[in-house]
Image 1 (cartoon, rainbow, N blue to C red):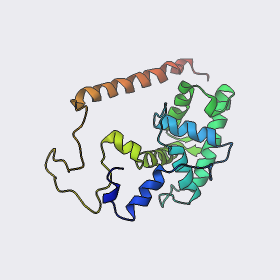
Image 2: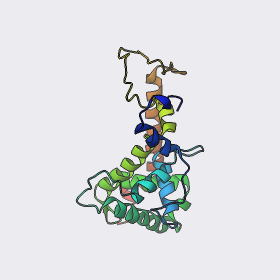
Image 3: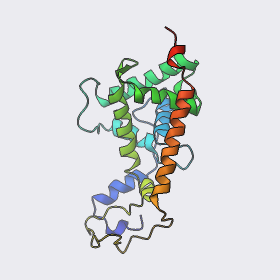
Image 4: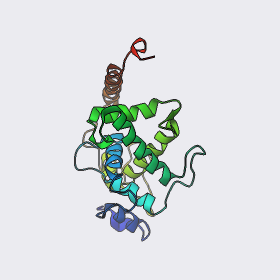
Length: 215
């Protein structure tokens, strides 16, 4: 935000609106809000405060009628897809544990979301792959449009209209700073793979083996 003076009169208010305080939800109902918040937090691993206000951004986008401009033929329009899928999450949680989705523990929420992600067909009457794609598209586009997320990925903010001058490898603009904790990315990638394996092992340990499943 220290670079705001360099932005044009169109860019500045757009970014400032992303940092503004949000009021009460305008699209999601009070009954839908808990499931929507839990789903979006879990998809983005936002477990602790401060959080990027993804729920509020998705809510505003749906309330203002700002979808991506297309939708899958086997899904309804995005607003209806969100409403139906949140109801389906609550229904699936009740079938599994007798509580709403937002009331499941973190492992239970993870397992239910993973059921949708890996499903090859329909889940709760909805095409699972396309549904998961809608969730992730809204979650990620909101998260990475917010200046707090820019800090995390080292993005210095819009360069329009000033542009970039130093395009060489490791070339920095006057407003850019050197990475504080610059480490070889390979160990980080190894840790990420280990985490994925532990996640998969955790899921498999909670599911019966094929020969143990009921007929």
